Image 1 (tube, helix red, strand yellow):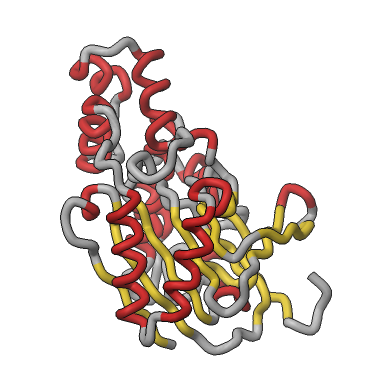
Image 2 (spheres, one colour):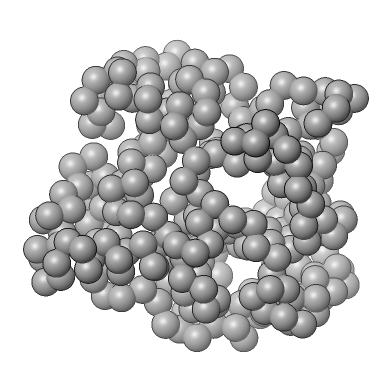
Length: 278
């Protein structure tokens, strides 16, 4: 596998966490869960101009759309076809980071795969051609960064949302909605509206995802995992609440995650051979 990742230059770094490129061999398992991370991603399938969307809530029914899609912030896991990750380039946005590049509010993009052509028009096709013509992975990342710089309106989230995001990240296990709303001078209702429009999720659900991600990060260290200790350290009321949140976001138990996780923290194998029907 070849995996490259880099942080874009200012001012893009305020809105984009990283640009990445991945080339890999075909996997034995056809599908993977991708767990929610709290922010959107732009994904370009460079092997084929197609994205296959599987809906767990509809019995893994498949829909097909463009190979260049904006994946809005996720409220629960999604399912991807691993064939689409054999040559793919992505943009991992910061929470609230889509606003300078797309007119649609983030909550309208939640849990959606939106073809980039619907958001950027003809520029989306031009971008794909530029990425395909770039001679190597680093050149492809540079081409993507140039396209984003041209599209950037440099208008990020409202100052109140930026303050809240920093507060939540500094203390994800003890975040207080009332305390944050009080500090920024907005009513709770108005604060939630602002936050959802920028980030795509209500503040409480966003903080739940932060706490879930904290648990995944702790589970990545060492061979033996003490889930009870992790639940306590991450601020869960008890083991039952931890397992409930885990199932809600991942669709599996912590033990199932540990058994089938991949080298990427948010990717989990769905053990199904490529010869089986999807």
